[in-house]
Amino acid sequence: METKRTVLIAGGGIGGLTLGVALRRAGFSVRIFERAASLRPVGAGITMQTNAILAFRTIGLDTAVAAAGHAMQRGSILDWRGRSLGTMLVSEMAAELGAPMIIIHRARLQEVLQEALGPEPLSLGVKVVGFREEPGSVFARLSDGTEVEGELLVGADGLRSTLRAQLLNDGEPRYAGYTSWRGVCEEAGVADPFSTSESWGPGLRFGIVPLGQGRTYWFATANTRVGGVDAPDAHAELLPRFGHWHAPVRVLIEKTPAASIVRTDIHDRPPVQSWGRGRVVLLGDAAHPMTPNMGQGGGQAVEDAAVLARCLAAEPDLPAALARYQALRLPRANGFVSQSRRFGEMGQWENRLACWARDRLFQLVPQSSIRSNLRRVLTFTPG
Image (cartoon, rainbow, N blue to C red):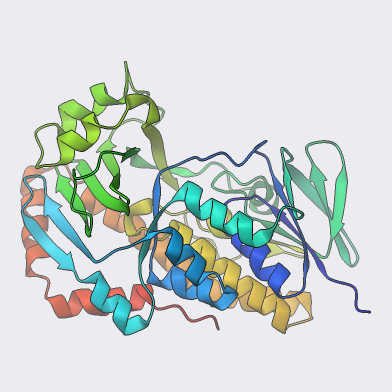
């Protein structure tokens, strides 16, 4: 009987859990180490765009993810007064590409992935703090002082990845110049349940994303110094900035308890041309952390997981499999890092004349160009 190949995964987020499911279904033995003592419901909404659903389909997870979320119909860019700058007919593109765009609470997505994975491979309250290699094996050093042996170690441990630090030693992530707030309004009827929007003002943006069942996820960004805190609470920070914006912005903020609003400074890293060495490779935010402006952070982690699992299953030679994974994923993921940063910089412009010109230019973009760009972004090819 053939011995199962063992893959160790540092990090039990979206990318790590998706990879775990994909590898187990391909016949691998998997162990995932997550530093959190329990996978508590955290975060707010996340969009699994059509490309992510197509990637989930290669693993057999698309139906479960879609059933747990809310299908997006259309998306709009608005100015702070609520005037349209551009519309994306998401439902039409979803029909063309054969998969929906799903909005889902992060906690619910995490539950779906955990259910598909099963409890055995996941170790909680244990962090991978380093690694060493020997011929034919890699050893993950754990925070409890033990070591675990595998054929491959995958770093899916996020923006401040410990494994990336040992592999690349490229320092701290770079601050994008703005912070974000995220919340979920539980009151039904406040926002359009079928349309998402992102509204732009001078140095400020506000997004509205329906989660289904009457809930609305929202996010806000503002240019500010890194490391800021809400004083005395998030409402005091948000209402002076956004309280005079178009409906229902103010109501969404007011109806969300201040204690449940999450503030996060926005960071990314410059793209690199290698995500691995030897028997260690990176995935998701550990490999290519990006600003959230294109909504592709989670989706690109899912694509990574689908492609890496496919490469490992198809190619028994590990160096060849990892080379194939990077060749397939580096250009696309790194492209999103650069595009997302540029898009965010433009969205955060403060000069009112520049903002006026930006808004007018967006209104002039033809629908055919919007569709062409969407098609490129939302198409997933497993390789």
